[in-house]
Length: 185
Image (tube, rainbow, N blue to C red):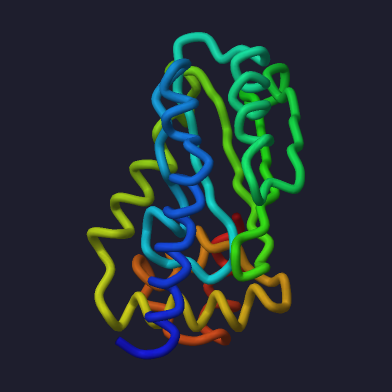
């Protein structure tokens, strides 16, 4: 395992440890089905960012405030944000926790609470599983390199980098830029 891959694995373990220390999955289970998605679920962690979704029959603001009030009291939590997007195309409730880990690194934990009937329900979960199944050592390394190069310039989303590498065989930043012109987000 090279340094970049090892760093991603170390970050993945730290992310899982943070989730455990906050008890977020246990807190959310009272109200729905919490699912880990994004780079942590895929094993492609480059940024200190954790994504999760919670699916339930009836997402309620009060439920999220109960979860977040408990999580916010945990050591390391430095902030909580909330957005009610139920009446927007996103059709969900968004929560973001800011967390400073023992190494002094600031993490962001994004959580969408949506209904089982949401048109995109479980899409991020299915995408994470598909990426994990499709990864090879080479594609994993390529994605991590591109995340480091392109995201530093704010030029790409992780989901698009994964698609470009896995579906289109992109191997470098120039190839990604060409792919992105033909495949807008």
